[in-house]
Image (cartoon, rainbow, N blue to C red; front, side, top):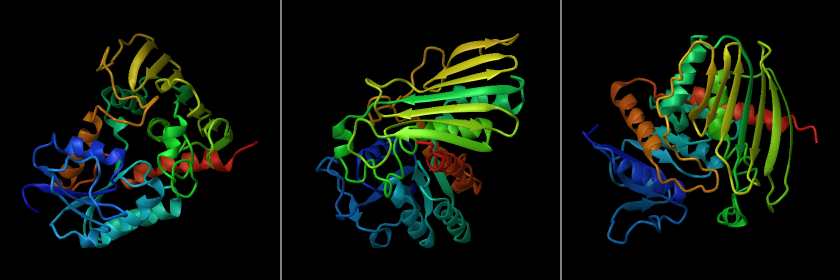
Length: 333
């Protein structure tokens, strides 16, 4: 491996631009090519940027070390398998996949070819999320009674009309639970583990799509904890995601990954970003703040160089998809 870690990005849409912008801020990391169905570079790249483009990884002539999968959810599987069999390390956008058997094959194929598999659930890198995770692991908050998660986003018709795959079961793998709320579902699973039972109700109200655009779920855990989730793209104008943790020693409320209410007995607020701001996604899919992606990319490259697991492995990211599929398979309506 050269001193510069070289990526090829699969996909040329909005999220690929986020990774392009993030990588350009990181020393020792570069992008040497793009993969697209047309074989052309992204239209958003300036004309004076000359970079290789192809229809699949095997056609890229430049040497490269890893791939970043920015394709629709339903295509992560094929991209990961192709790259792994070429001996390339795989960093994929969320959700890791929309089928548990396919996710398991992604994990096993990467292991068989001795390449790393990382997933961009970058909200785990947010300082306050890491603080809360440590407190929960050390049981500093006492027994957790309940956790209420709401992801009330808004997406207009133009968003869903911008790609034929949007709002489809085959490519998106679902509506706001699998798309907009996937990051927060990942945090829920990271914090509280796998629920024993899920009951849900969802429907399609304001968009001409196959999947849900609003839904709710109740989750019961082995220790008795009760969780609730709401995921939506019909909540005008869009609101910051909110997680309320009700526990033995008090209540913690987080909005958009920042502790906004701290009412815990005999413990000062441990927030590391008081008054801070993190990309929300409440009303737009565009990402201006790339700091979370920069952290994920930097960790992934370091994991390759140090021969260790990336901070978010395929096995760890699998749980979010498992929970979401549980929501979809236990609909009472």
